[in-house]
Length: 551
Image (cartoon, rainbow, N blue to C red):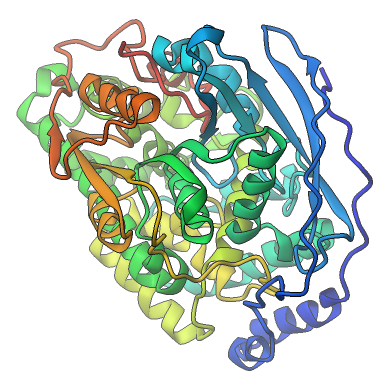
């Protein structure tokens, strides 16, 4: 059902011609000279620029007790009275008006996940204290979902890219990876060139502040996970006095992410491979429960990648699954933590048997591509990669070598998720007027809660430590566990977040939660609290953000 009406897309900026030239030059090895001429970090507003108008929200029922609206915000904050982009928003009012404290912004990870879907999918699993105390609010950020979604490769081209990719790329994989990334960038220009300069996180933070005002809130109450933690960090840095409570779960090191992206990427490679390594160690120690590897899970995994590359498995929809498919699915599914480990073992065993009911043999689909395209674009706008192709090759080669389980497929694969952005971002052809480069101190803000998970495969724990130190007024909560993020996966962490958001009770910095269960003794048949196991076992999870209920 279509719930939102969007204005026609604005005309493509004049930057496109220069950007196409830059892409052509990049393909001939002169990317640095082409890109150096671009002004990529223009700040949007001078002191004389009038403030942008606060959007008017006209709410209508959109089923299940939710209300939906559209919010018109400036496309380019340098011209706050100029062209607009329409954001889709959703809310559900506080369940107990007598206890209502305001509005809780809920921000999913990504970039690329729908905030509207995040609220709708997770509302019933939120602790009662949050539902009673707040109108729960979400929105699709600019360029995502119902808010003028970005498009780069179309479904057919993306399908070809992930079908041609390998789980074990050969020694000559770098050149083709760079060329494919250039094709991806060109497709972004062709299909979404008018939006590319304006989807960076500085403009997202400015949108949030307009939405805060539109909702009548004096200050912001916010829960953001994964990339949502970076959005919250930038908001706090730009508007520190407007912070009531920010809970940043699965936090980013914002300085490295924005300004030293190779350093940021490397920790992600090592964290992902570390999580996979710990899973395979568990398989070796508990062969009965894991069921994969016949005493040598690492050797079996390497062989499986190569075998699937050599002889892909035909899938029911006419596609095929290979070693890259296996790595891609593991990259996301291992985020569930120890509770998923028996199911991963069973799915790997099925993959060995070429059984297409294994969720690890489900190639990325159009639902995945809707997430992956914006994921690449936003990070290419946000990050400042050096423009040297030689430096790119050195870093890609080092990451593939030092993260051998999953790293090579990521390093040389097409532009999809975080680990595969560098080849596109080094050649990025558009302006970056919406990029934020610091500072990240948020001086003068209310206390901010930062949460890190020690075995997080996606947002490494040391990033949360770094953020807690960069912010002027932050408290670090540590979740000792495998898996991505803590809220909804940990009773201890969930209670701490609720107490903070509702009553502003800030956990003492250094507080540790350790309530993750050990791997089940058998493969579960139903989803444990806080997981998407049910979806994963059936192979239908497409990076949908779910929280779970541990209340």
